[in-house]
Image (cartoon, rainbow, N blue to C red; front, side, top):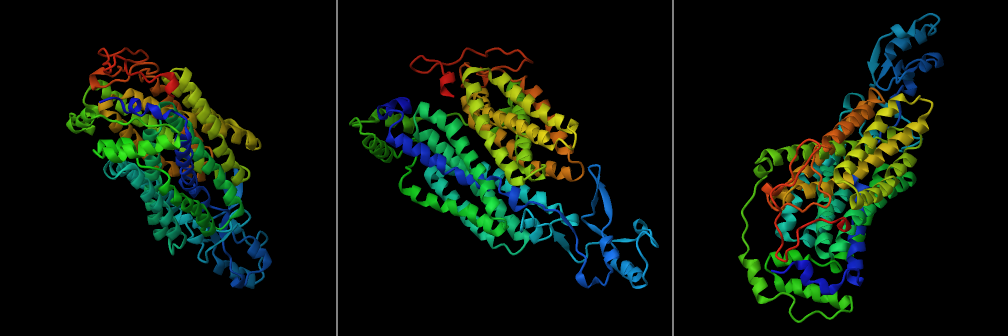
Length: 554
């Protein structure tokens, strides 16, 4: 059978049909930018201290010293989780004793916040944390909330590919959009943390599933040149636009329920797209539904003002589709030989650590010095030049050195943060953004790099295994942020060290730039330290051209 792209080449590359699909599918990604990092504001932890009731019958002097002081990051701050025992303070107050004069306050017995907490409302009017007091002995529920969302992403990424292969790209895209939007609306009315967390997991499943479905649908409908731009810039840039809009919306809506509702409503505008975006003709052909595929292609030709040929796919080609049979491969083939085993382990480690760094830095923006809304916007907008630089590097330079250099950049600047004096907070923020720039660029490039490392027979499984490792990294990332409660530099030291380490390991991967894509496991480029060599002579397509993912295809 002829190559599909060759069969539909008469459509052209950038006609009205392709432009419509490009922008509508890219726009459908914008709500994913909201949802993916909404926990930055929904689950933010404002400053807080134990509540001392108005009816505690304490004198002003004793009320002013009712909260003990403790050291944090080298400075004395009021305790968030303890107060001095009110009964003791009340007795001293009643008999006229004064703190510091008659009584050494630091020697007094302490108690937990039995009357709840007072939260600072200068930045956040309400969050999930303040709604259900997810602090002190319950502070583990905060990062778990975000981790459950990413657990949903892990589950969704595992099943979404199988669902779209079985039920179609378009159907899965819109069903999972409905899951993301519908369950987010229900989430607004959560009556307790448990309900919110379970719904957040389901939303995570829908979020990644419609992202993957839109990505696959665009890659299969669009032609070669448009497809690459869609995959590397279209999807990523529009995701970043959604991410940039998140702090803007959150700035004006400080209540978590209203904010979540506002972030959910844009998903409803995707409903009319059902009647505009077609099913993937490639998928229809793979299912033997040739007439439906041809009908979509003819409508596309009509929209582009082109007359379609009378016969798009010949009878013999249709028979080829029915007769095609392939040797089955399993995940065990990813560790079948020493070479592919090393590539698999390195890829899994690479994806996991990059994901920890990306989501760890994104989720940590409220903890940086300064306005959290501005910091979040800066973290979002820095992704745009990162994606552009990644695209440029992939077009012109070595995959291995491009990935490694951006990881080194991200890791080293994160390690430098601990050396910045506390009064130079702006410099710390600049270094964090540089770290985010490097890690985001590496994240963008690693998709292409991994696809080129694996042979055709196990490429989808290889990317799937790496993607699952990435989801595990995102599940762990909130706990890296959580460590900042003990030492504000600790998350940056850990993420920076791991990023530099994985940058070193990436140098052991073979170079793929300009090399033929391997079809079989035996044809894979070999891992030999900093050296590489081509495996068995690569296969050629029927027209005699080697399968090379050229620079212009990136």
